[in-house]
Every structure is written in structure tokens, then in C-alpha cells.
Image 1 (cartoon, chains in turn brown, blue):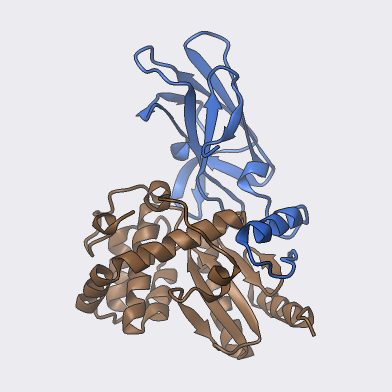
Image 2: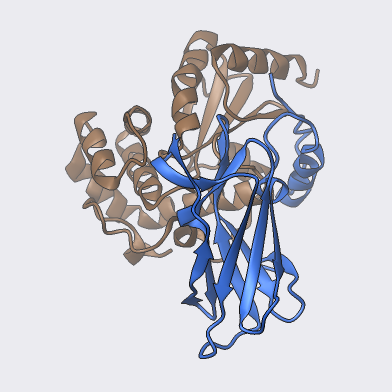
Length: 205
Length: 148
């Protein structure tokens, strides 16, 4: 996917399918890409002792179901580092949403856009609904478009690395949460809490 | 709670992936799409191909996500009606569970050695799979990953 194929902030302009859009040239990834990709948004405590790496899609109902509990465990625990891996696999609109969220990062609003997209009610969310949600969340849309234009290659590169990571790790689908040495799919709050506790217990001494 | 070990971090993603893959036998996370959706191909008549999917319990395929191409040209995929599910991703949607067959008409005007087949589905209540793309060798009818 090149710069021309990225979105403009008008619904309907993504020319490729969800599968084809990101399946470009092979991308090299390693463990550092997984944990410390400089382009990947990070939430929670940057110095936290447990890292949750979340592979998500904005049209994934199970991602949406888990999202409030994920936010809650990060907030209540206080020592969790959360790495977001946008992995849009379900619809073209999923790619559109991921590009908007990642574009919002450049104005320091990734999590604002992310939460707005995850909170959209209903199913098979289209690009117009995603655009409206991001607007309503208070994102500076003029700046968002400018940042998406200016950082198109960086955004595309990150999405391609996320895709390559998911393939290299043989991730099953969305959501997948890598928590310490464990891998999970949909979790509720208690599940996240237990997973974080287990991850701490398995940290090398 | 479902879980599986990632093991310690290796340097390369290939090694990392191998470790994860090896751990996939635990009941932690739903199995991979390849493990739950089994695709086979057979041909009873020249010019036609029968694709069969067997789906693991608790998983399903979307009818409108099943497609086939030959040399980049979309082919007619004839499927029996599925059941309508109020799907958490797409709303009321036609899906298949258990087993489904698709008849592919092979146009004489299109040449090619390999058929490309795409499909997508979910594991109920837990996970949505990425699209799966397979390649069917039209001489041997063997199914492999499309990138092979």
C-alpha cells in the first residue's frame, strides 16, 4: 500500500479490500518490533512491569466487548504498559478507522480516537460512522487530515508491521492480548486482572 | 481463564512464532483458522470443481466472504443457502456451520494452474478470524497456502 492508496477523510475512498490493502511487500519483524515499535501507540504506565500487547480491529465485536475492561485494568492496576497493535482484518472500514486512530496519535489523541471508535454501538460499522465518532470525540479534524497526509508512510508501515507480526506469531484473530508470557482472546476485567497477576508471577527473577 | 505460554522472548519473530505455534495445542485461545476450517477440493466432471469446508464446532463461515478466482478473474461460486445469524460483526448475515460444499464453474476461456480461494469466519463469542486465502492446484487438487 502506498501513499496514494491511503485514505482521505472522506468515507469511501479506500480503494482496496481489507485483506489486499495491507498485504504488500514482505516486512521484517522481530521481538523488538513487537514490544518497542516506536510508531506503535502506548498507553498505561510506560515504565510498567507488565506489558499488554493488544491486537485489535474496530469492527471486531469481541474487541469492543473487552475494551472497557482493558481500560479499567490498566487504570486500576497502575503498573501495566499497554501497546496497541491496530490489526484491521475484518472490513475496509476497519482500515479506515485504524488510519484515523493512528493519525490522531500525532496530536496526542490516539487513545481518544481509539476509545471513540471502540465505543461505536452496532455492527458492521462503516467509514461514515467511524468518521463521525472521531469528530464527536473532539479530534482536530483539519490537523488529523494533515497528519495522515504527512505521515502516510509511517502509518502504512506500522500497519504492515502489525500485519507481519500477527502472521509471524500465527495469531488466531481479533482480539488477541499478549500479557507477559501468555496469550489470550476475549477477556473480562477479572480475566485481565488474573492474567496480569499471572504474568507478574512468571517474570524472571 | 484461557491462556497459553508465550515462552521467553527470542530475538527473531520466526522463532517466536514457532514457539507460539507449538503452544497452540493448549485450550487457551481458539484454534487457528486453518485448524477450524478444513478445505478440500475434488473434481467429478471436467470443467467443474467441488470445494468442501468442514468447520469445527462453535465456528462458522460467512457466505459473502467465500470467493474464488482463476488468474485474477472472479469465478461463479455456487453455494447452498446458509442460515441467517444475527451476527455480532455484520448483523443479520448468512453463515455456514459444520459442513458446506461449493461448486465452481471453471470457464473454458480462463486458463490457469491454480485456483485462489478466500474465506472468512469467526469463533463464537470469542474471536474473528482474518481472511484465509488458499491455493488449489488444479491438477492434483491439493490445497495449500496461497503464498506457497
